[in-house]
Image 1 (cartoon, rainbow, N blue to C red):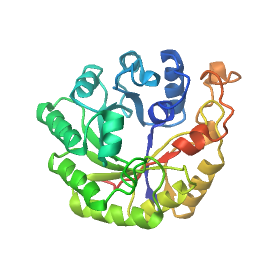
Image 2 (cartoon, helix red, strand yellow; image 1 turned 90 degrees about the vertical axis):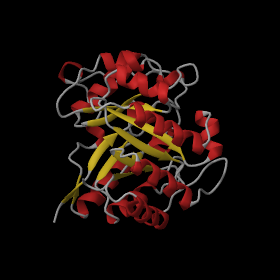
Image 3 (cartoon, rainbow, N blue to C red; image 1 turned 120 degrees about the vertical axis):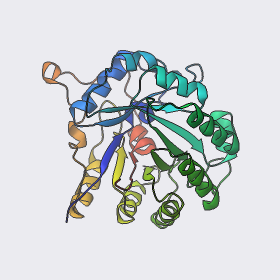
Length: 302
């Protein structure tokens, strides 16, 4: 019996935020349009962070202004705090993805706030959210390990999941931000999260930093995952091997994602078929976005 997973594309946000070269708004829009032409229907396109701190994410409002609402497509904005939420609403994003770090070390360095302060910020956002505002999803980052605090206790992750579920967010993602998860831990955390938030969609987000992304994605599907996000490999000229392996493995399981192959995802539109995507100077590191950013997020069907 076939099963389906939903792809959530994160390339325009997660794929670009750590690049040394900050792309122009037009370049980012071209990437977004080509990903949508290739079949991406739900995508993180912008991040409402301080552009002085993360210049790669500058131009969020201009990008959203150039992406009028289209039925069947959801453009997601990343949010860290109340100010980011206000910008997200003003920019008319279709969804807001609020990040809560599962460790104080990462949270303070990345967002200037402890875990408790980030959960309070989420509560503040949900308190002011109006019915007509975009739905809120929550990503629990460093849910499997932190580069500063080391291993992240499962109890800490589940506390955040429970708090988010109590606030009735639309979806919760557990993110292996630095790529240290293993399939056994993935299964255990999915089961714990499902118990803590039985009525909330659950999504998983992996990085292939240590070549475990595919195995973790496989474990997620086995554990009941239905919603997935992916990020193209090296932007501009994408390595396709890992994506082909993942699609082949999922097809073997009777799992279908409903998206084109990675090699086609940045294919130019008809008018530009012979021109590659202009995404600035190409990096010589063949693993840049391929290993640092190949992302897969999985969630139960609603």
